[in-house]
Image 1 (cartoon, rainbow, N blue to C red):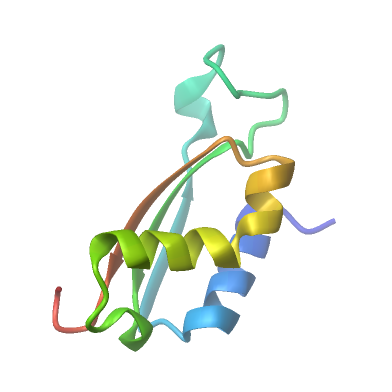
Image 2 (cartoon, one colour):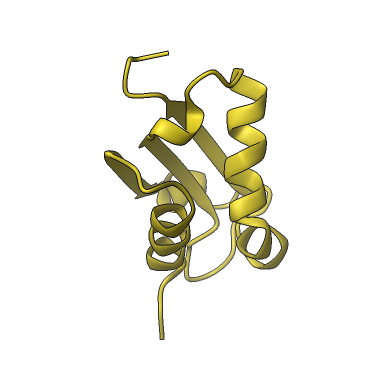
Length: 90
């Protein structure tokens, strides 16, 4: 069975061909908090750098990532912290 982190990595790679991608499962930090479930995989941090974000606002970038991960957000992921940048750092 594929983990949620693996699914997130695959979908973001397919959607944005990133130069850098880091997917971190932070669920252990939220044990007992809202949205946490037994087994984890509920809270993630994503750091992604891609040409696809060039010229886009922060809100547009977040919407793009959320759209690519709509299935995961609807199923199991309770929280997703996103840092999305273009290669020039914007």
